[in-house]
Amino acid sequence: MDSRRAFFKKGVAGAIAGSLLGLSENELHAKPMAKKEDPFHLGIAGFSFVNFKLDESLAMMKKVNVHYLCIKDFHLPFNSTAEEIAAFHAKLKESDITGYAVGPIYTKNPKEIDAAFEYAKRVGVKLIVGIPNYDDLKYVDQKVKEYDIRYAIHNHGPEDKLYPNAASIYDRVKELDARVGICFDIGHNRRDNQDSVADLGKYAKRIFDLHLKNVTAASKDGKACELGRGVIDIPAFVKMLRKIKYPGVCSLEYEKDMKDPLAGIAESVGYFNGVCDAV
Image (tube, rainbow, N blue to C red; front, side, top):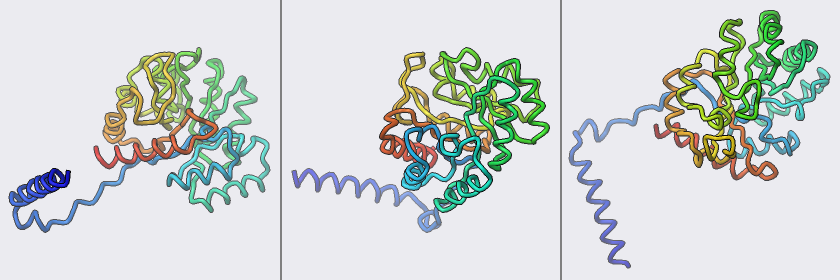
């Protein structure tokens, strides 16, 4: 065994030496190129922490070194006072985390849409992830103009009768104000047998937010899984993010092992960061 290890080490050393011999003096002493900063950031969708209080959620985010959170109402209720909102943001700041959006928020009528925009205004974010009825889309169009807050409609896969995929949203909003767009859930989109990499490029101008996940199959039966273990080609997806110069947040929405998600979240975050470094 020892002789085999020695042979292997010599072989590796020889390969490295051979590659170095082929380099010029300038190349040998050249400094490594600085990594180009991506325009997008990795975040976590609040729903990933549906079974956890805010402090526990922030602790998990700190462990995986992620700094952007899409805020859910179970962490910051709709009826929160100004003092409660200020305390919430202070707690995020202590953990070096920014709450960049609210939602998803389901609405059934204009009154509930009013409440969603007022909530976002009081929380101090410029993006709502929402699921409105078709009949209320023109009202959403009015509200984005009134508040100057963007509104991103979330797709939920083949079970969703309103918005199963990115195309179903785009077709409804393409003639509306440019501040009405898509929260692109790439996993649910793939479960509806759509090409999530191609759709990212196709609908880029209307994609304001991303729910990042992978799934086990491109069908209704597909289940959420760790980011590197599913049927979506994540390296190709990262390449497309860079091609379109996506400037927003890619929020990991981890929907597996939701009572004990830290290991899966950590694996998914590590995989995404590794892909970003490698491709």
